[in-house]
Length: 437
Image (cartoon, rainbow, N blue to C red; front, side):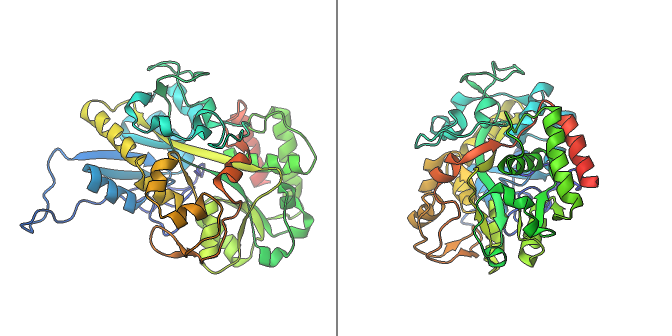
C-alpha cells in the first residue's frame, strides 16, 4: 500500500509506524527534518514564522526521511508525516478532514472517500508531468502497449471526476483528478526456493497440502480476498466474473474454500504488516505466502533465499496517489501543488524504484537513476554492479536478475487490482469470521 487495512494497530504521528509497506530500514513515518546550517556566516538557519508546512497523511508507502529532507532542501516545504494503517487513513479522511493537508492513499479507497466530499479534486493542468504519467493509470496499458487486466478497482476507472465539485467518477478523461498517481506495483506469492526445492508456477500452490502449516496469507480484507480469489480460480474451483466485485454467493464460496484449508492446518499465520511477513519467511516458519516485493528483497538482503515468484495466472496489483483535504486553500493549496509537482520530478520516484516499486512518471525517475540501476529494476537485465537500497545497504550482488523480469512483463501480467466491492461490508464480515474460525 499497502497496506493498508490493518485495523488493530495504533496510529502513530511522526513516529516510525509499521504499516502496509514499512520499508527496508524503517525510514517511513518519520517527520520531515528542519534544514541545517545555512549562510556563509555559519550561523544556524532560523525558520521563518510563515514556513511552508504540509501535514502528510498516509500509510508509509511513499514516505521516507530522505524524501522529506530532499523536499525541504529543494522547495522549502517541510513535510510532517502522519502515519496510519489503510483503514485508519480512510476513517480519518471521513471523520477528521481538517487534521491533514495532503493525503496519500490507494485508488481502491476512493470508492469510500470520494462520496464523503472531504477531498478536493486536483486540476490536472497544474501538474507539470501529468501528460507524462504512465498509461498504466490513464489507459490501462503499459508504455509498450500491453493491455492490463482490469478486474477490481483499476486506477483508470476512478482517476477522473465529472467536475470540480463532483462526487461521481467520470468515464472519460476530464481536467479534474481524484488522485495524482505516484507509485504502484504487481504483487504475487513469495517462496523459499531452498526449502521447497521444486518449481512453483500457480497461485493454487498456496493451498497445496504439501505446504501444510507452512503457508500464510495476509490478513487485510480488501487485499487478502483478492489473493484468496486468485487461489480459488487457479485451483479450478470457480471462475469469477470479476474477482474485485464478488456477489455474496461468490464471497461465501471463497471463504468456504479458505476456511476448510485453515481448519485442515494449512496456514501457519495470517500476517498484517511488512515485518511480520519478513520474519515468517526469514525464519522458515513459512515457505510460501502472500508477499510484497520489498519484503522479499529484505529477506534476500539478509542472505536468505527468497523469490517473488511469477505465476501463470498473473499478478494482483495496487496503486497509490496524492490528493488534498477539502480544508486546504490559499497559499497552502499552492504549496500542495508544489509538493506534488516536486514528488513527480524524479528524486522520489527513483528512491521508490530502488525499493521495488514503480514510479508514475518513468522518465523523471530514470533521469535520477544510474543506467545499471534502471537496467536491473526496469528492464529485467542482470545487474552490472551491486544493487543497493536508498540507504546504501546491499540488496543484490552483481549478476542478479529481478524476479518477474522487466516492467513490461510484470505490469503487462497484472490480472486484477485491490478493490472495494459493492458488497464490501459483507465481505469484511465474512473475512473476519474466517480469521476467527
